[in-house]
Image (cartoon, rainbow, N blue to C red; front, side, top):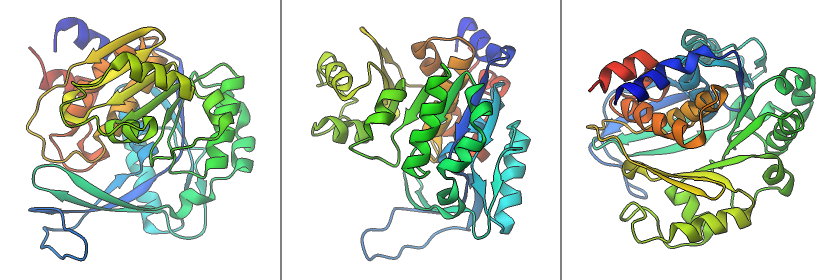
Length: 324
């Protein structure tokens, strides 16, 4: 990481513009195994770890650790995981004052990580499913005051649509992570979301191409990909390519973002740390490509630790890790 990138990353906390994130908070029940099990197969694993997660909470924690002013909107349950999740977000610097407390379990995920870093995830929404349109309406004024809104699809679709519409009407930049993947997004959501973020597998399904991950998209016509993304409704988008970096489409301009190579131990939550960085960057006035470039370092840092939020670093920690 050169001096200019380091200064840019360390400068993310100097803006008063805020990030709002509506979505999921989960307790991640994580176990590591030598390999991922096949269908109907049992494999031996290591000790069970309970870690803070949820795609939206991960994104919020990442952005806040980098210095952004972040407020989380969503719901936790009445179980012990609720205080655990809120406490870890607060430790990262996230404002959780508007999070709803609901009866029943908080959201959970069951994660298996193989020793090379790949993982499988099963999601149980719990209290995340109780974040409804009425909740969004009750927080309309606060959501409208944010400069950037981050959304994923671990919340009810009606809620996501309503939140995007409130933010869009107020002039905020809406960044949508189509994950868990939905092939046909509501027209209103496509209209109100400014930027789409997907990984290479989601992009392949969205655009109807065979694969994007075999060689980092080396054989793809990226002009055609950009054209088809625009036809889908997004002239601004980011496609992450795993260990091969990412592609950024910003109107007529394409940017290939190089990967940052590290010895990965767990890729859980790396994509969320990447999105959190983009949210923080956009709030600080950076371009989409500049934000994604910083995201490549932040997500690489996360891949060197276990868990999602548990592996995230502050801007200073990331800079020190990649200095020189």
